[in-house]
Length: 261
Ligand SMILES: NC(=O)CCC(=O)C(=O)O
Image (cartoon, rainbow, N blue to C red; front, side):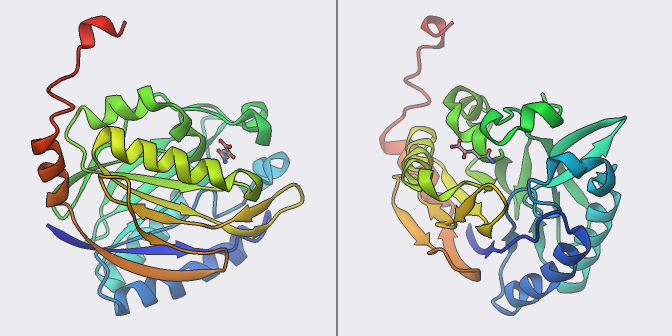
């Protein structure tokens, strides 16, 4: 299946959800103009890492995000991978991914599983404990969030289902961009999957974020890589490549799970 994927490598206004919400439609409109099947946003784009103010600015039950993504999907007839947003549910805060299909239906809901202590997530957020699975035009896909990619055992459990694409929204600081690229390539190669990883650009009071959003094929080749500017770019991938790679090198069949516990 050929899929055209749009990467929205955006700046995020720190602690200003209204400003951030007002900016996403122009990315979606450009993606639709480029005939994209799906657009992907970065991590925590509604608030940035303004964690001390979550009580005032997190999206309660994700209602605003779900409503806006659904309306934009319907208006522009494309899927939206909503990166992730800060949400509040039952007196707790989460880092949550929502995905809507072209009819505006919510088809994925995932809370970040591994909280990143260096950016104080563990002081403010609750961790998720559920996998994600959804389909992009019938192609099975999964989604994790940023620091989750440092846990290959988690991504393996997801790829053992039937996933062919791993989506990774992120706010990954510039000093570790070399690690970002290597970790993402490793996750693509070992899971014989496409990886679509979208980082933000710009700065907040604590970090500068280096972009370098990438789309990586199942052999670990970067088929698209952005630099550190705010921009939207699209690329077309052929997801049948995963079956070809899994066919000639049957890593999943050669596993010895009885030895791994
Ligand atoms: N927002 C994040 O999870 C950042 C993860 C990160 O920077 C890392 O090095 O891991």
